[in-house]
Image 1 (cartoon, rainbow, N blue to C red):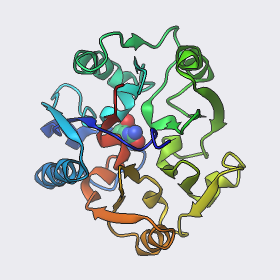
Image 2 (cartoon, helix red, strand yellow; image 1 turned 60 degrees about the vertical axis):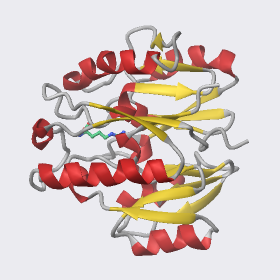
Image 3 (cartoon, rainbow, N blue to C red; image 1 turned 135 degrees about the vertical axis):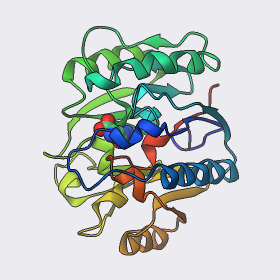
Image 4 (cartoon, helix red, strand yellow; image 1 turned 90 degrees about the horizontal axis):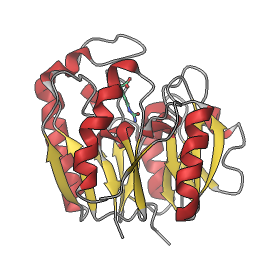
Length: 262
Ligand code: CIR
């Protein structure tokens, strides 16, 4: 138990200066790169303090969104899969990540077929993996992943991402084996029936993208009602400033690949 949130290692990528041109659904202004890098440094320190050994890769200037490493690979205890991002400008990021992943998983496989799949749509629980179809991830990509992870003991369940939401995990996070944090617009679909759901407060939707790492839940700063609800659920919460990342639709989960190879 706990394999879905107990991590020994993580891979991150320093934000490139080109992140000012990162993809975004709504333009609320460019991120401040100095602030983005400071927040990233604090994020890395926080993961280290939670007991994770971090590999920091250099930013890729030719890929403005390359700091969002979560979208490029899925690393489970028994194996890793190099994904195929649905955003055409992000395709090359996955191949750039393969080399780093293979240091930990020598037999990492590339997602078979032609479907697309971004890690932001993948919520890996203990025995099942929920994957949201989105503008970035297709049913074909999800079916291909299901075939790869089945021998590793996981069942994949295809679910839907709310309209207008970038990724499935933009709206939810795993808190422990049986508990998720979710926006109401997502949990209303019934996809978490059987799990305990802690609701994100109305108007605090970006707080849904939090991460449980070992004994801590990392949450973005500025969402007091939701962070209190998570604390009231018995979890230790550490808040991190993610304001610049949010301008290019990035949450805390996107910034790392977290894993424990067995
Ligand atoms: C993108 O649109 O692809 C980036 N600007 C944000 C990616 C966020 N990744 C994630 O939620 N896993």
